[in-house]
Structures are given as structure tokens and as C-alpha cells.
Length: 306
Image (cartoon, rainbow, N blue to C red; front, side, top):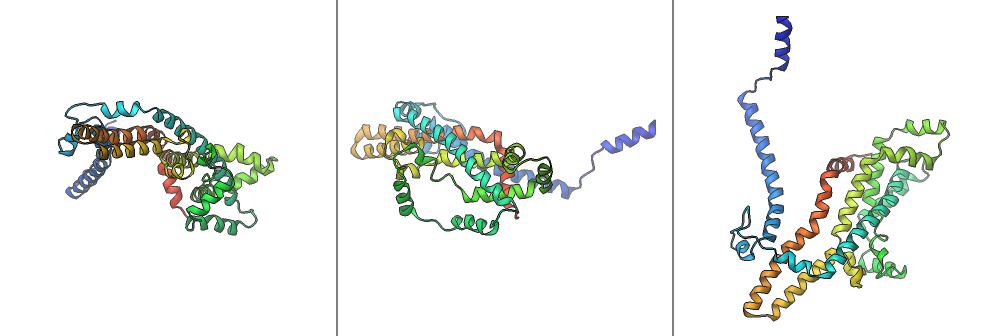
């Protein structure tokens, strides 16, 4: 009995660390905490600056907490009716665009992963070339115009739904995660290619679906340049472009004002700038905690070679 107790205590006893191991642990934890602060603090500063007096921010009086709470920036932004329309447009663009991107890129990546695909090597090269060589803005604009997509809802979700990088990442995932024997077993049971893809491949591909979906959603949510080039109808413009236009118009008003009016406009402009950053980033940031593990896995997937 005493012998068994001694053995159990010996197993539960933590190994003694010498001073070198302790210094190493302290260094690792210190670097990790420093990196965490460097990442979190700028985000926190933007949030508290959006509730602070711009004069306090400019003078360096705001560090961890606002000296006085002010909601003027958010109130002025909420008065803009186009903000809500832009929010709705961006949400619709993000949802529809992500679904279309998944419907296009995932099957393409799976097809390229099949070793029995005719011309697989050359097709892979065709997908890789656009990752390094683009057609340019003017030819792309002409193509979009010829297809009649200018100033339409679909210009934000269709022309740029194909991502060669996402296709290559999906191909790498299927090559390294789906065993070839699974297809052979499915064939024995009389399963065809399409049924095999939908009933067996997709349920086993939740990680890559989440990764590519997250990448696409973030890209569409933050996109404003495509809307600037291809959309002139204000009712179709996304949130990012509307916020940009509001901030630019405020800067224009500053140039025409003077005295106390100019000071007030400058104060509101600064507060609206920080509030716009918070409004446009908080929704997509709330999505990250739920898909973080898949996002990290996707980064590792993209680093693997076939």
C-alpha cells in the first residue's frame, strides 16, 4: 500500500526546473504577453478614441480610458441614412458573395486534387498563372461592362468570386486530408462522383469550408475599391464606400469653414473617423472567435506542398 502511494506521488510530482528553464519560460511568456499587448492595444485605443474628445487624443491624454465620454461621433454617423443602407448592402454582398465563392472554389479545388483528372498538371498551371499576372484595371473594367454588370448587384459578387489562391489551398487540403481509399470504397458501393462529393467530401471538409468562407467574407466586407470603380448608384454602394464618402465630405466642409464652426467641424470629423472604424470592423471581428481554429488551420494548409 505504501509503495503504491509513493509511486502515485512520484508520478504526480512535477519535475524540478533549473534556473535556465525558468529563465526560458519567463522569456517566452514575456514575449507572448508583449505581442498580445502590441496587437490588442491599437484596437482598444481606436475604441476609446471614438468615445473621447479629439483634443485629449491629440494631446496624448487618452491612454487606457476616455477622460470624458462623448457619443457625438456615433450620433452624427447614425444621422446619415445611407449608413443603414450601406450596412444592409454589405451584409447581403458578404453572404451572397461568400456562398458563390464557396460554390465555385471548393469544387474546383477538389477537381484539381483528383489524380485521374485529364490535363490536371496543365490546368493547375493555368490556375497558378493569374496569381502572379493580372489583366489590369482597364481590361477588367471593359469585360465587366461588356457583360452588363456595371451598376448592378452582381458586380460585387460574381466577377471576382474565383480566387486562384483559394482553389490551390482547397486542392492542397483535399490532397492531404482525404484518403484515396475513400473514393475506391465509395465506388465499390456504387457511389458516383457527384454523390461522393456532396455526401462524403463536403462533410469531411468543414475546416476548409470555414477557412475559405472566412477569407472571402472578410475580403468582401472590407472591399470598397471595386464599388468605387463599378458602382455609381448610391443605393447599391457598400458600407465602406459610404463611410469613405462621408469622411471626405467632412474634410471638404472644413476647408470652407472658419472660426468656431471650423473647430467644431474638425472635432466632429475626428470623432466620426474613429467611430466609422469601430462600426465597420466590429461585426466582422465578432465572427473571428467562432472560426479562429479553422483560420489557423487554413494558414497551415496553405503552407503545405503537394
